Amino acid sequence: MAEAPEPREHAESAHLSAIAEEHTRDADEVERHPCPRCAVAPGSPCRSRSGAVAGAYHTGRFTKIPRLRI
Ligand SMILES: [Zn+2]
Image 1 (tube, rainbow, N blue to C red):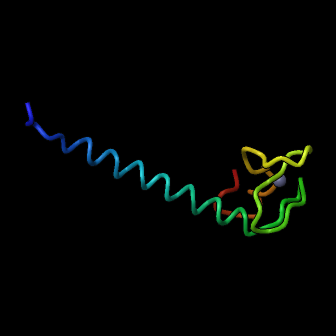
Image 2: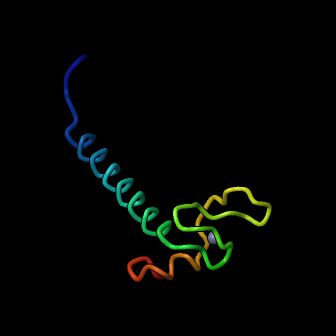
């Protein structure tokens, strides 16, 4: 049963990697600015109050980038 290749599956994974690429670029832009909330320097991810790397960037950091402002 080695037949029936699915072209749909291929198109889907190409779509997914395009999304991943977009996210990487957004993170790069966010990291270009210091965070007004936790005061990390440009190039660093956000930190929580305990000093651990936060799972997500603080909202204030996104407002520096018009394209990402909500
Ligand atoms: Zn922050």
